[in-house]
Image (cartoon, rainbow, N blue to C red; front, side):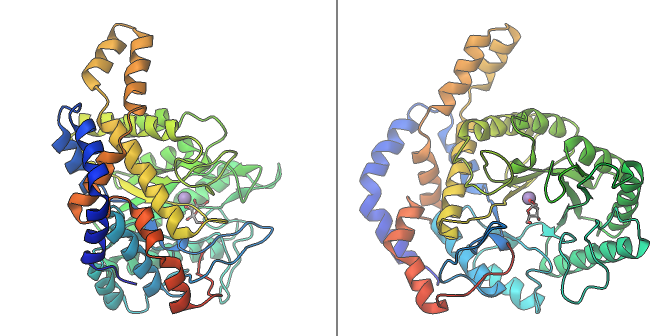
Length: 424
Ligand code: PSV
Ligand code: MN
C-alpha cells in the first residue's frame, strides 16, 4: 500500500490549526528552534525486517492479519511508515530470515520508498533446515572447529548480501554462553569467539563497521559469552577501529545505568549505536518509551552531549534502530509509537540548556542540575516532532492518520488473514 502526498496533505490541512497554535507556543521559548527542527528532520531510525509481523513468546503466538509474507511486502510496510512520519528511512535485514534473492531489484524497491539499508544481522542462534552443524552449544565459542567455521562463513556471507544492498555494517549478536556451571571453559569460549570475530573483521570491506551486541541473559541462563558492555568492549578494542559496541536497551540486568554506559563508550569512540525497545523486567518486548521514558531521555541527553563534543553528525554517525517484538499490538502501530517516543526523547535532549547544566555541575549544585534536566523532560515537545514531520512531507499525527485510513484492514484484504511474517 503506497500513500500519495495528497492524502497526507489533506489530513494535515484538517489538523493544522491546533498544531500551529501548539508549535508557536513552544517555539517561542526555544533559542534555536530552526536548528532543532533541522536535526529532527534529519534523524532516521531503521526498522528491522523482523519487527513487521506479530511476535510471540515461547508459550504461544497469536496471529495478526495482513502481515507481510515477503521481503518486498516488508519494504512496502516500512515505506508506509516512512511516508507517515518521514523518520523511518532505513531497513535492517536479518539473514537468513530475509535473504534478498535479487539484490538489485530489492535495492531499487527500497529506493523507490526512500529507504536505505542499515546494519545487516547474522543469525547463529538458530539451526536452519539444511544446516550441517548445530548451534545448540554455541557458534563462535563452540568446542568443535567445524561449527566455528560454519558460523564464521555465515557471517561472511551476510556481509556479501549487505554489500550488494549498499549496507555498511554488520551486527553480530551471539546467543553463545552456558546454562549450567561447569558447562563451559570461559577462557576457551572467549578465545574461540575472539578468533572467529577476527576472521569476520578481516572480511569487512574497507568502509564497513562491525557491531558487537551484548546481552546479559537468554537463551543461556548461567553465562553469556558477550554478556555485558565490558565483554563487548574487550572484543571491540582488541579487534580494531572498525569494531564497535552495540547497545540494545533490553539486554541489561535490572537497574543498569545505561546512560552512563553510553557516555563512556562514546568517550572511547566505541559506541556503535542502538537497538531501541523498552522492558519492565528484561529483554526487548515492549514499545520504546512505554515503561521508562525518563531513562530514554537521559540516554539521549548523554548522546547529544557526547556527539556535540566530538562534532558528530547526529543522524549518521551512530546506528539507530528499533529491535522489538510485538505480541499483542499491531506491529505497524507499535513501530509508529516507538519512533514517536524516540523522536520525543531526542527533541527533549536537544533543548537541554547545556551551559547552565555545566555551570550547575561545576558548582556542585545538585538541585539545579536536576531541575535543568527535568525542565527539558517535562516540556511537551510533541509539536516540534510534528512540525519536523510536516516540513518533511509526513503527517502531523502519523498514528492518527494510520487509523483514519484503516490501513490494517486494507492490508488484510490485500494479503489475507493468515500470513506469518518471517523472523520473530
Ligand atoms: C537478541 O535478543 C536480539 O536483540 C538481537 O539483536 C537479534 O538479532 C534480535 O534480537 C532478533 O533475535
Ligand atoms: Mn537487539
